[in-house]
Structures are given as C-alpha cells and as structure tokens.
Length: 262
Image (cartoon, rainbow, N blue to C red; front, side, top):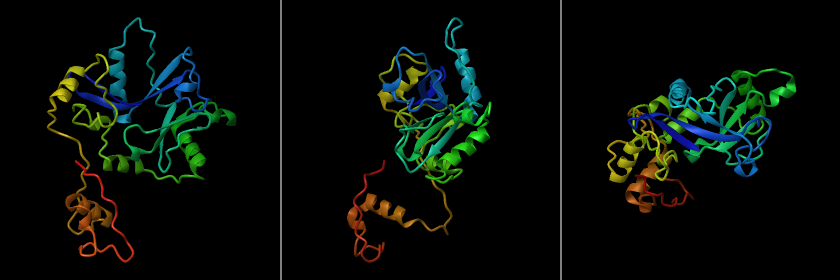
C-alpha cells in the first residue's frame, strides 16, 4: 500500500510503498497475497522509497526506534531492485525471486515489481547479484511480452500529477494529493504529524495543490485528442459535431462525454 512519512511538524519527509511478506520468502510466489501468509510466521516489511530520500528516511526511522525493541531496520538498497510494467493489470503468478502488485497510487503507473538479490540467480550458481544484473535479468524475462522503455516511469507519473521523494519534502500531505493516492488514513490512530493533517482535512482549507502542467511554445501543435477532451468538457458533446471547427473526418462519430476534471 502507499504511505507517506511525516516529521513532528506534520510535513512530509517522503512518500513510500509498503510491502509485507513472510521472512525467508525470496523463492516464493505471490507473497503479497495475505491469504497465503501464515499469521504465525514472522513477517518483514519492505519500504519502497525513492532513492533521493532513502538516507533521510533511514535516519528518521532509527531516531524513533525504541532501544529494547525487537524491530530491526536494515538498508536493503543493494539487495532489492524496483521495476515498473505497463500494459497489464495482472500481478498474479510471479516467478521465484519476484513480488508484484498494481501500483496503488494511480492506475496509469502500472504494475510494480520487486526483484530480490537471492532469487532465481541462485540457480545459475552466482553467489550475489547486483542491481545492474537484476535489471538485465528482468528485461530478459519480460522481453517476450513488454519491450524495455527507460525513462517512461517518470514521464507517466508527472503527467498524472504524482510527485514523490524529495519533491514532497517540507510540504503537507493534503497539498500533495496524498489522500487521493491512498497514502493517508483519517481513521487511523495517533501518528507523527497527525494533528496538522487532521486539522487541514476537517477544516477543508487547502490553499495549494500539486497538479500536472505542460508548457509548450507557440509553434507546438496540440494533439487533437487533447483539444477534443477540452472542448467536450467546456461545451459538452455538441462541441464536436458536423458544424464544429474540429473536423474528425468521415465516419468518425462523436466520442462519449468525459467527466469534468476539477
């Protein structure tokens, strides 16, 4: 599930994705499905956090860890790699050494996959894998289904208005749309930064929001689907028809009305 970590002022340190799985389950599949996890088996939580905020979050967690606590906080950056897959909503049946789930923040972000250092590399006789070798292995595994497209993730998430990592640092959770990204609970018990978050929510006073914005020069041609969507939202379905200046061509019917985007 998605989450965000706040400081004592109620300001964001970073966002994150939380994964729960039983310990020693690197070679098991579908470990994210709760119905296959033995409740009596010790579990571990993986915090999927943007790299530019990882060190800050690790220091933050260690600061609030109780001395006699049995909780162990370990940096697994070199042992786990993160991948994104687009074009499928099926996260079932992951092979050994992988866990997968649909990104809970926004549908356009696709399926998120974690590959473990001691997954299927054990079968090849390698003692330890590296982030680069795991990347190559994952691309080989998916090459028959989804071609690699480096840099796609950042483009898609920015078009969706999803900020992450250091882009959120120092801002409040609600002005960063965290409640829309399933990262804020208003029924949860006491947590660090809850007072500001709850007060902002119940008063309804949010003066700033993160939104996607595209700046183009005057010579850039706006894609026709964008113009169609804008006209439909502003003037209704009648804006696109036989008498409209937007010529869709012969045999192209009027698309269904779109919901109003606020």
